[in-house]
Image (cartoon, rainbow, N blue to C red; front, side, top):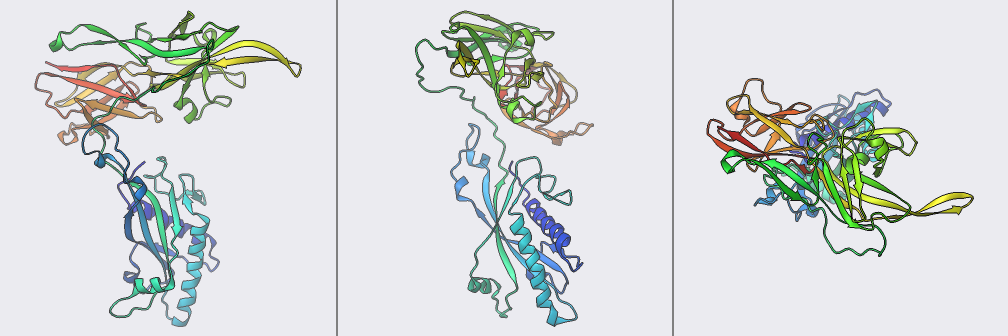
Length: 463
């Protein structure tokens, strides 16, 4: 995750140096760390200055395309930065003859600290204290520290002034790669879920595509009434109140071949988020278990089509033979069919000989249920209760009239300065401060995107 406050990096490095040096130094001296430039520190004892004196752009990130489809995409691309620091030891006491020796002693501990911790991760701790500031933790912001090979002559030149100041004992470091936070995209293109020409063995199971019917209601100004369009790849939800919403079709060839068949689903959330032991990778759809006491999950098959009704949770037997329930969150999924062709005796055991089909994409989408005006320009969105909006592992975006709203805690009393912001109130509701004037009649295209899955078409209608 990108950042905008470079001082967070300096704060983390200062804490690393202070905590580790004072933990290991054997003289009992309390070494402090400052971010001041070395020539401004003054007459102090047992102090280290860590000063950022230069910033450079990382060339690798210069030509990256920004997200979204709106112009000026460079503003929406994170800028890769390399931060340059000078580390200097300071100690000036009433006994000047010992000052250089103390400085060298402190510098030795500082050099070993950075040598021992060349990369700072979220989990890096000293005496059970997290080193990185809380604003950096949890966003995959590793900090890599590299000592720059500086020639003695270059070091002296760094300190050279009109007064011919004596060079101080210092080390030079490069910290990389820090991504400077870009503007948020305002228009997002639809994801590409399949592309290319595919070859497959004749007689083996093969999926051509997934498709579904997507129901929505037009606003009154556009004629109103329920609409039904065909979507491919399929866009379905776990809402079983309307069977059209959660029914998808997988079209292909040789889908009834072999002795037995098993349909599998794969989703990044199921592998990227901690799950019960024995759970990982694709998940089998066992209808005898999945449909037991849960809404949805029905399957009908022909040689060229599988029709699957999904639910908001899926129960299956994991690798440890334990029943496991997983939430079917919105997002992009893939499905494939595993066919058992025959069984053979290998080493005294029956081993199934299987053939897997290709994987095809489908999208499980959220659905907006209702929008209610709760203030002058404040609206409350309610979603169909197929997942929890306040789950910490989902990525949520709110877009109205093509403008992206920013997640931010709203004041209890409406504040018009918060226009363009939203907050999640409960598992099924969120509140936003509209960028448009809600006193004017009109229709406003409203959508949410959860883990890359865009909601069904919905319009906020204002009388």
